[in-house]
Structures are given as C-alpha cells and as structure tokens.
Length: 381
Image (cartoon, rainbow, N blue to C red; front, side, top):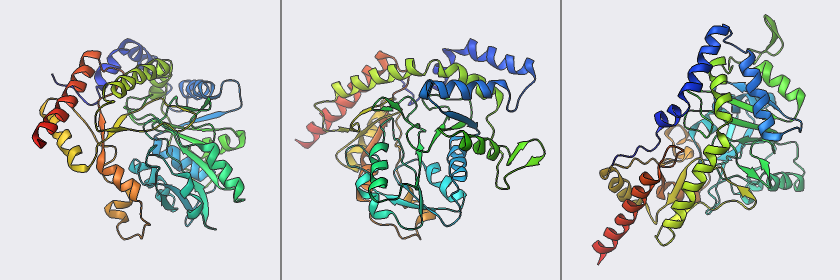
C-alpha cells in the first residue's frame, strides 16, 4: 500500500464540482481583483471567528504577507525587536526580517511545543515592540496568559500578532485562535485546514481603524485608485478565484477538522503503549489539529522510523528539521541557548493525517509503526 503524506488531489476532488462552478462564476463575472468574492469571504470568515461580535478580516496574498501587514499596521519598523519562537515555519521569521525588525527567539515548552511564556519576560527590552506567538500543529499558545504577563510588567503596549497558519478552528476557552491578540495572521496555503489552490492569506483584527489601515496597506498604500495614503504599502491582494474557493472550503472546515480529530484520537489510542510522545494540549485549548506530530526517544530512532515507513510506502515529513535560529542566515547572530527547541527538532516526525485519509490507510500506518517497534525490540535482544 502507498500512502501519501498529504493527498491534496483527493481532498479537492471531493468538492470538484463546486470548485469548477466557483471558478466559472468569476470568469463570467469578469471581476478579478478585490471584488465581491473577496468581500464575501472576509465577512464570512469574520462571522465564523467571532459571530456577531466586532471583528474584521482583510484578505491578502499569503500567510507571510498576513504577518508583514499586521506588523506594518501596528507600526513595527526597522530596528524594533519582535519576540517569537525558532520552532516554526521559516516564514514566521522572514516576515519579521522583511520589514527590518529583529527577531528575538524564546524557547518552547517541552510538552506543548509552543512558546514558553515563562521565558518571554526575560527577553523583553526597551526595543521590544511586538510578540508573534505561533499556534503550532493546531495547539495554541495561551494568549490570555501572555497578555497577563504584559500587564504585570506594565508593557501592555507591546503588540501581539498571533500566527494562526496551523490553527484554523482551534479555540482557547471557547474563543477562536487569531481573535485574542491584536492581530491574527492566517495562511491558506493548500495544505492548511482551509487551503486555497495556491497562496492566500488573511488578517483578523477587532479594530475598525486597524482593519481600514490593513486594507490600505495591502493595496499599495492607496485607499482609492491613484490616491496614495501610506507610502509603505505593498501589493498583497487576495484574488477573486481563490476567494471563491475559500468561501466553499470554509463551509467544510468544521467537518474536516472533526475528521482529523478522530484520526488523531485513533493514533493516540493505538500508540498509547509505544515509546513515543504526543504534543500536550495547552490548558483550555480545543485543538483543530493541522498535523499529527509524534516525538521519538532520540534522533537515531526517529531517522530509523522515517526510513522504515518510507520502505513500506508511507510518506512522512518533519515539521521542522532545522530550527530557524540554526539556519545558515542566522549563524552569525548570537542566539541564547534554545535547548528544548533543538531537542524537539531532533526527535519529531509528522505522520499522515488529512481529511482524505481512510480508516484502512490509517490502520496500515498504525500496524507498520507497531511492527517497527517490535523489530527494534527484537534487534536489541
């Protein structure tokens, strides 16, 4: 049996007719940039996230741009320090660097694998202007705890930009990821919980003024055509075809998240007696899992399992094998020790988990993983 890590074709084929109709609608309408499909998606996503509470969504070109726009709208500029984690996708950090700000890394919690809030206070300086907590694999950083910390040290002016790329549908104490901080940056990369058929992103905020600023910034800095209001705007507009597709996929989000939740529960149950570890949910978090990530005892065991699964036709990935602070471009920058980040990166492995994964396919993955540990035990005897 051959099992892809993520079967995008199968997921999209489930709603192929709806997607085809949506694309044809845009073509026939002849409206391709910042039209009614984008407006509808912005309104529908805001409604999904906060219901009738005040909230605004600004569609943009990608999750990376969602972070850049959030930081620009918040007034972050060259030389400002932005606290984040190194255990994340590279775009989290390149977005900070893109505006000339300086990323300051803090370690992650050894069990939840997200930002260790107890480490944040020690990294705050007079130059700290923002924090980008990353909700990873579907698990959430406790933003309420982070806000409380900033109040306690009298630094409430520090902006919180939630990186929600991997947590569409996750909630903390019943409140959606991306709606608790000052800004929530969403990526709709094709493999995300809501995935476009290309790059797309969005920013959520509660302030109407901030939303207006975001919409100007994404459109060159102009509010109306040929009338410039901000001279540091960029071209980052969610296009109409992607917006129509996202409007369809948003209606399936909870259903697909529930499918993945059942898959995750089965993995946890079946692997309960094996010497591997799952990410611990943060207190109060109802995770909408984006990835199923396990941690092995050490790197050697992880690498052996990767090869064993590959030889048996099972695709895997590592999210992420090299922490950002260990990337070549950061090698000359002095970074404090991030021992948990480095340890976790050496031991983690992502197993197949997507809405298209069948019970039979998951059963094969489980059986193969169990056989690996059986053979490991026999070889040690």
